[in-house]
Length: 436
Image (cartoon, rainbow, N blue to C red; front, side, top):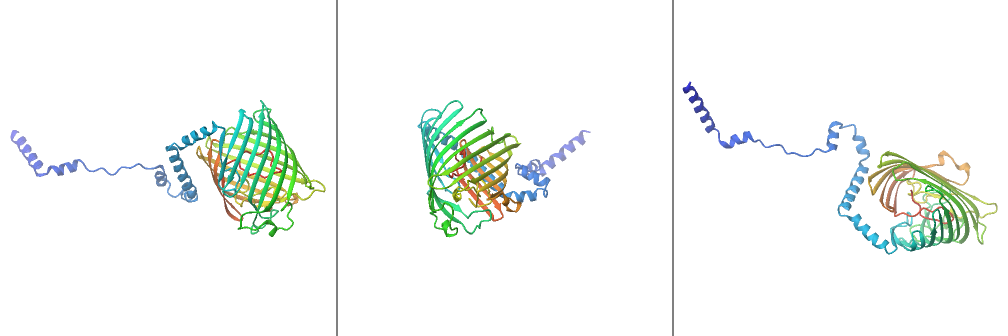
């Protein structure tokens, strides 16, 4: 037995010597394959390679834009730019200065300004607003305001110069090829009193005395309105108007993606000074919000109507005071102010989604019509649009809006800078409008 054991030990030692130590190590430690993290998208493609392909193709532009903007916002946050901007704003606020970005309305171009406040206490005192854009739009406003617990009183004086306003003619069947532009100068003084019985409901009354005049626009690429439209009501003359109106608002929208709704109704009477323009104006808006994903997305529905009725013996309603649709606040598949008419009806449905607290996107469907008489209200005369939009927001409202819409006349892109306070009544002066 000892001889056998010694023989086995001898054979094993010979075998170990025959194999180089390097080869033994190679057999024991084979190189591991390269390791990497598998993304959820790769897993989804492996499990469902064909089912999601049409959707990925359809939403590819949206994914590219949203991911690029989200990366930019992440970089913005990582460099603490928001905190730096906030410190700069607070420095100005402590001195009564509020910077303004944009706010002159769509088509006014890039611009800004500031508000300077002389308040002896909150919401009681004098403020001056001034802003302008690189396209020559100008606005100046002086306001005095005093408020108690549920009562607010204000007096205002305002001046606006809007040198490049679009006009394609009157009626729902106007020709897109007849694009013109006009310049509008408007100055007005007025007063407003508002009562707020509850946190969600308010009543108010407004008075204005306005001086309005129009002439050819400053954009040399387009003709003036009188080149296409002879005897256009109100063009090339100054019109003075006095206006008095009543309004009420019911607003219950806690946050962007919560349950909520709003309603507005208003009526006003405009009477010319030195002319025979006399008409009543009625307006109403409704809005409802239905959350889909908590604090992230919601369905938003909006409806608007505006009616104007001349009194017997009145001159025709000036064209620039008539309701107009087309643009980021109405029909986003059409150019700005594409249709003008005496009356307006508008419906909108949006699906809004927050990509980031400061970046929001929306899929939208708009439809509406301009009409002079109720007999023109017809399914065939309604204009319908759909598309996609993005909004960059700050604590004070929208900073930048980009919307791409499709209509029967093709694609239209709308870019808006800044935001502005919503006016309680839309007549008898013209303001840039924004969606809530």
